[in-house]
Length: 192
Image 1 (cartoon, helix red, strand yellow):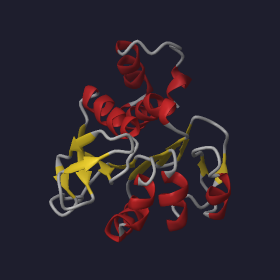
Image 2: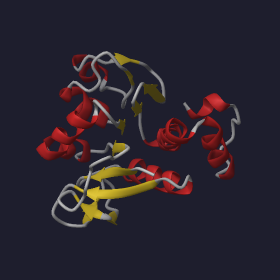
Image 3: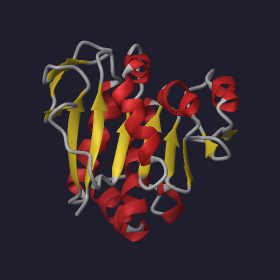
Image 4: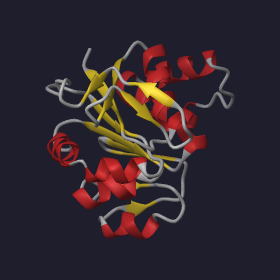
């Protein structure tokens, strides 16, 4: 199975980073956290320090399935300012899958042109930046548009994560994982 990566920058939104890791691992997907700093320890926006599996320099992104950008401030801004990640995202957008939540669709993906012509959502107030990046803005919690999944914020983290599972393993499997986690709303479309 291909490996996926969740990127951690100082000031990341903790629930938006850890929920995809938890849900993808429950689904049996190979996912690693990656610090964009030279240290494994990265502190989130609410003072929770996480020990990343890898630093950016240690990671091998060849053949990656998902590149996942949590939001949070200043986390999303720090991701945006990390040139090596931006270069990786631009290359990966042509052949792989990218997921971003909260401020990251507008602050990380939109300036790179990754959302151009794609439906997307983001944290309320980021709509102008999404449109500036060519996105077709949707006022929804989670939006899947081809190989890109975006979500609007912390309370959408579980849906966002299940949408990633659904895209990779199928809606039925995402529904099984969600049901085991007591996610109610058993309709298949809940996970999109």
